Image (cartoon, rainbow, N blue to C red; front, side, top):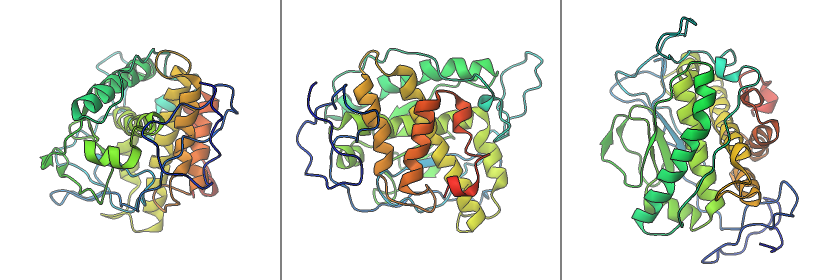
Amino acid sequence: MNDAEPPWPGTARPPEPAWVPEPSPWAPNWAAAPPVPIAPPRSRLWGAVGGVMIAVLAFSLIAVTIPRRVDGQALAAQGADTGHAYSGTGKTPKPVPETARNPLLGAGISPGPATCTLPELGRAPEQLKTYYRTLVDCLEQSWRPALAKVNEPTLPATVSVTLPEHSACGAAPTENEAVAYYCGGDTTIYAPTDWMLSDAGLNKARHIATIAHEYGHHVQRESGILSAAADKMTSPDENSTADKEVVRRIELQANCFGALFLAAVAGSGSISRSLANAAVADYGRADNSDTHGSREHQLSWAKAGYDGKTTKACDTWSAPVSEVS
């Protein structure tokens, strides 16, 4: 397309049209995502289930609320697999409960190339389900070599466009609490049709950015990063300053992992370089949040993954507090 690129995030946004063209491939690398209205704030569900405290070794639910407000609590499922450190003996892959020292964040690790042949994006539930499942298959194809290289699990993630009354993570959040969320207990990304369309319309960049972020949480679960992060939490909720910092490091890394995938697939299949640029820029449209970080940092960590192209660039755990505020 040769349309001019829309302005950088933060400028006034006109109402969303029925269809938004992709940005120009000749536009600057960090052009904004196509304009859509910012919806009213929604909070993030992040609570405990069945009396399980946040200090357990695995998070089970991570919800994305871009661009809503993302206050909330962490949710851990009963009987969650805590994982064990890999000993290097060639045995079955195991998650390693480490954050900064996780093997996935070692030098030279990155998602591999993949050609995402996505179907047409539409408003019907079956169309969205097919679109998301195809995208998740592509995410898995891209991330599998990185996890396999460090002998960490590569369990497949599933996606659902309907909201269950209960899941492995307990009661589902309400529409006022999430737009989409990841449940580690059943390795499922829940992206209810009505919620996603209300937030993203038919903006492909926004749909891709959201699902890639949620899959980033799946990568964190598989690698053991989430279990190690849970160990750092000191209370059953995230109201303490220290716990909110841990949550921000989790969320900012998920943005970085999402953009890392986009860097690996940009320019092939259905994800053109201009669409990938717009999806990365979309991470910068969220509100400031004490659990997700400032708008500036939500974008800067996405850019770190997109430009750095290795998981090491997504090490939010070693970053000073000033970079994850």
